[in-house]
Image (cartoon, rainbow, N blue to C red; front, side, top):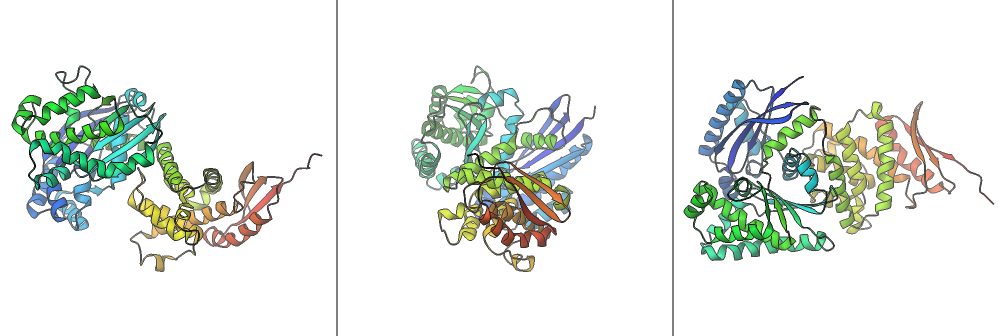
Length: 516
């Protein structure tokens, strides 16, 4: 049975981490080594927008060492991801080019939504324990150096997620400029949390009773693995956590270091993480915490194993992306029934045309998201629906979707309503590649047809099947209703579809005799 040796590299805001894994379908994902190097890239990036030459030299030196370790382990494959510290620099592309040329390691920068989704996948490495914790109403608090992410689960499904710039490094830098007394820290962090948390509560917490919290962080979670702190590693009730935080609040950095047996530098960041977590616990009314001590590297390994089909059972992450999208759609008062119809129709057309469009599973998902959000612009304007939908989608984070993918979705929603812009025009306003442009064109053509089949907003069709015959896309529908409007509008919308696919969409109606 094949065993893959895989390296996952996390170029974080405060630390470089490389984990070496052995992955097989029999044994799953097994960590065999973990190498860390502290380098505070975020201090430069968040403060000046660039990483200094000295830190870049140090980064390259460490990555060269990581490369040597990978060779020693005879690693089959690797992935290296840069997060917020790299993402927020002004000269990202120049820096990544230097890293590749000097170390041979390619670092890909991932968006916040991709990073948090990988953290979420890291939880899936915990197997049944993860499944048990998300079975009810649960929140995930993911604390990073530059920001946090709060996600809500209901019955094994992700229903809402929100990104906030309240990361521990960012908090520490902001507060230290104020030179507050220790006793003031809690009050100041509380004010900062409340200012960003109030809208989240209004949008998502009105009718939800959240009692369980899953905590992802680099400071509290490792401490909670110690038997002296938690009777059951990683698990603690909220009252005990509050008591622990109060003890930390009344100690200086050196005392915290000795008390928890951690470095003084980690003690400083743990202090901020603990106070931040305490405020979130109080806001949500949490009674139980689980901190499994997983990292981005674990999520990278899980995704690799998933892609290589080395895992027997995997959580349905695509379902979570679509559930989160449905929440966004609801926020902008889109019609759920109509969205479901348009999405079902679009997917049926997509699946019937696999050999024609040459697109894959990921593009199918983007089409589903665009179908759910294509009318969200009506929340702002009944006239400029396409443009308003584009602006809303580009301003809305969709967990698990990259910035480039979000831009594809936004353009598909826009051109579903507005005149399509060809590459020579579109390229003036975007950096999307020609390949991405073709994806936009193909998905737009499909969505226009699907949307045209419900212009009356009455979902007239019951049983629908789609087949290819000669040069036609035949849409067989079962309905007794008058579909003159749908047939006429489909003819008008068919021109772009024919241009993209050289196929003409036609409706074939199965008629029934009316019962007397």
